[in-house]
Image (cartoon, rainbow, N blue to C red; front, side, top):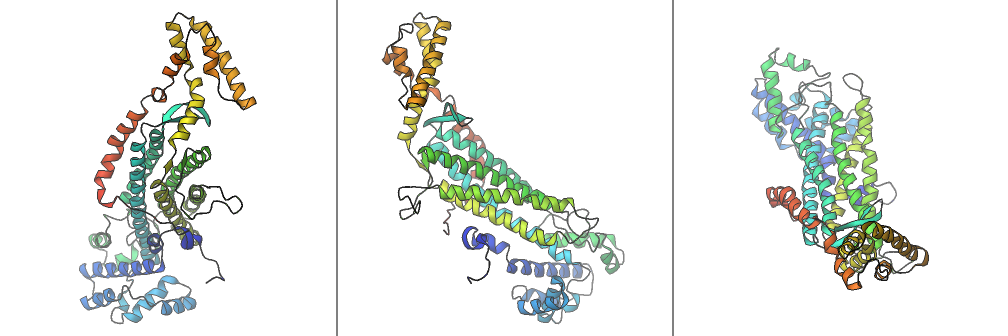
Length: 476
C-alpha cells in the first residue's frame, strides 16, 4: 500500500522480531492464553469447568477469527467483549466460562506486562551484543594514543580504546536497569473492576485462600513469580513510566556514542562502516556522511522525548482508573521499544565495523603534543640548570606565539623550534623529541581498559556467552 500512512518504525527501522511483539497476533493470542490460564486456575480451585472446555479453548488460541471480532467491535464498541464473543464462536462448549469473573484489564493489562517483559528481553540481548563488540574494539585499540578533549578543546591524551570504555560504561548502567526492570515486573493478576477482587469473592464464596491461589496459579502459568500486591483496575501506570525511563537511558547512551562518532568522523580519525555502493551525498560524490550515527542520534531524540508520555499518564490517573491512558499508552510504549530496537540494530552494525585511521590520529596528536608536553620539557630544562620560574614564563610566551601562528596564519606548530632557539632552555631538538612520545602522555589509559574489561565487562559476557555474536543488517 502506498496511499496511506505507514510507520517508519515498521518499514525502515525496527526488526521483525520487535514488531511481532507489539503485533495484533501477539496481543490477542496472549489474551487467549490468559483466558485459558484463568479457566484452568478456576477449575483447579473447584469451579464447575471441565477439561473438555479447557481443551477447546487451548485448541483455538492461535487461530484467531479476526473478522468476527472486528464486526462485533463495530457493534458493541468494546474490544475485549468483541474478542470474548469471537472466541466463544470457536469454542461453543466453553463460551460461557470465558473471562469468568474478570474485567477488561485482566487481559489488557496482563498482556501489556507480558509484552513489555518479552520486549525487554530482546533489548537485553541486543544491548549485550553491542557491549561485546565495543569491548573487543576497546581492547584492540587500548594502546593507540589519541587526543582527549574537554569543552571540545584538546586537553591531554587518552587512547582510542579508553574512549570506547566511556561508551561501554554507560551501556553497562543501562544493562543493569534493563535487568532490574525484567526482574521486577509482576502481573496485574485478577483484581477485578476496582482492584478489590469483589467478583472473585462472589465466585469463591469469600474464600480468601482460593482467591490468592488463583492469582498465583495464573502468574505461574504465564511465567511470572507473582502479581502486584495492590491495584485499582489497572496496574500502576508508573510501571510504564519506569520502563520507558530505562529505554530513554539506552537512547541517551546511544546518542552520546553517535555524537562522538560523528565528531570523530569529521576529524577523519574514525568512520562508521561505508558500503561499496553507498552514496554519501546527492551533490558531492566525495562525501562519506555518518548516516548511521546520525540516525541513532535522531531516533534517540525521539525515544527520550517519548518517555515523557507515560510520565504524564501516570501523574494524571484518577482514583482506581480512567481511560485517558489507553490511546497514548498503546502508541508511546510500543514506539519507545521499536525506537530502541532500531537504535540497537544500528549500533550493532556500526560497532561491528568501525574504521580507525591511526595515521590521521597520530598527525593530530603531534600537532598538539608540544603544548601538552611543556611541563615535561620544563623539567628537562631545569635538570640542565634552568630556573623553573623563568622557564615557565618563557614557555607561556612561546606557546602563545606558536598558537598565534597556527590560528592566525594557518601555519604549523613551531613551539619546539622556538624552545630550541631559546638559550635559556639549553635543549637540542633531539632532547625535546625524546620527550614527545605520545605513549608517554596517556597515563593509565591502557591499563584502565584492561582492568575495566576484565572486572566489569568480561564477567557479564561470560555469563551470557550463548547469546553473544549477533549481527544486524539494516533495511535501508
